[in-house]
Amino acid sequence: MSCLRVLILYFNTMKIFTALLLFFFTAGKSHADIVVIGNLKNNLQSLNSVQVEDIFMGRTRSLPNGHFALPVCQSTLRPVFYQKLTTKPIEQINAYWAMLAFRGQISPPMEFPDDNSVLSIVNENRDAIGYIDSRNVNNSVRVLLRLN
Amino acid sequence: MIKAKHHVLPFLLSVMTFVTDVAIADNKLSAWSLKGFGTLAATGTDSNKIGFYRDKSQTQDADSGWGITNDSQLGAQVDWKANESLQATVQWIARDHAGNFFEQNLDWAFLRWSVQDDVDIRLGRLGVGVFSLSDYRNISYAYPWIRPPHEFYSTIPYYHIDGADITKKFSIDDGYLSVKLYGGYSYNQLPTQTSGIHNQQSPATGANISYEKGAWQARLGYTYATITSNPPIQDLLTPINSPLFTQYWPDIKQLIPAMTMRGKEYHFGSIGVAYDDGIWLSQMEAAYIASNTLWSPPRSSAYLSIGRRISTVTLYSLFGIAKTFQNDVNVPNPLVPNPALLAYQQQFSRILNNNGINEQSVSLGARWDFYNNMSLKAQWSHYWLGDHNGSRQWQQSVDNTTPNAVNVMSTGIDFVF
Figure 1 (cartoon, chains in turn orange, red):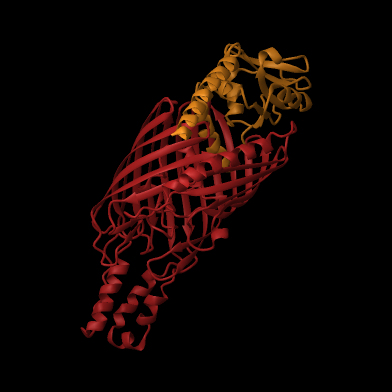
Figure 2 (figure 1 turned 180 degrees about the vertical axis):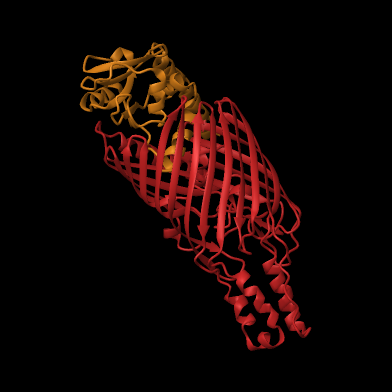
């Protein structure tokens, strides 16, 4: 019985802890815009949402200027990014990409853990295209589209 | 079996976390990537008189004793990117397949050369793309059902072809049109009604056109294949060619050309339409398969599925129908009504007339995406089996008294990483 009580206490504590975490994690972040960014050496000045969707849904492999696109994802923002772009939840996007990737058609965009790593990848590769929280953008990259 | 799931799930979650950690360990673009997919599913029926196969490449059927091999599999894929236009891919799947476990389960091993951004050439072992779902039948996470529609997909148990394909993509009117041509040599090891495995060899060529615009997709496909091998029919040929049969039953030799497969042909034609707006999803395909082999008679099949997503749950229904068109094979009478010869006549007649398909089904099911790369599915299917429904999709009991209806229940977890 005492084991059971300890377990219940443990789960209740975890519930409160998770709720607090969620509160602090989502507070202040929920209204952030996402910006799609490109490399400064690429002559691409902007993209519209259809062009970005075609690239990040694997429908096309090239940028409008003809270069092979190198799309990269930011893992934490990925669900929000795809929701804003396609209105579909991440489960449907994952199922769609599983279909493309495992039939050997096209690999999904590589994922990076945070805005800083996406910034450095885009900064180092001429044809890279990524997305980050708009508050973390700096002048090492070019903003191609703002999603809000 | 159920207990095993409790141990497997945390294990799979930890493996996935590990793989993800490795993939994003540094902030460099890697030339290598490792991905995987799998399904852990249990399948059972309400009858012991007939066994259910997902398709006839499998060696184990499911009956009322349930089984986990019908719909479970675990696959891994390694991609290597040499540069922006050259990539190598290898995919191997652990699943129940007759023949060589390593070789037959290697579905993809190819080099892809992107000649232009809209032209791809692939060379090596490729998934067979006869119908819409053919080349991702094992990726259960990518479709709503527990398995591809049985009437449509269980009769083509071919998973790979060694050859090449070329795909050209056109951007037309806000949509994308893809044209694909392929050709190669298919080697598939398949169980047979007679003893042994048919090491089926067949050169095949085909083409398909698909158009995708918004929520809609349409597809037309055609494949032509010739068979260059024979099934293991020695058990039938040995008595037919014996001196006893030659003397007392000479007409039986007329059947030999029909029993061989070498030189026989297949034509696969199909049309499909799919719709998915994120809430409603629907898919249908219809096919006609022409062939002149007795073991796999000409047939038509079709299915229609309609589903509705409610948050992370998808409810779906599925209707399927398949029917073969072939007259009964008449086994000629022996010159002398000897009981032993008459018993052989019955046996020949049973084996040669056991290749038909006459099946309809309705399925209801649910998919719950309980995690962003995992889903839980449950499906109930009711099959009506008509006259001449044979052993191409089912395991029949020895006395051949097959029921004319059977329920198949399945539940499973799909995941990708």
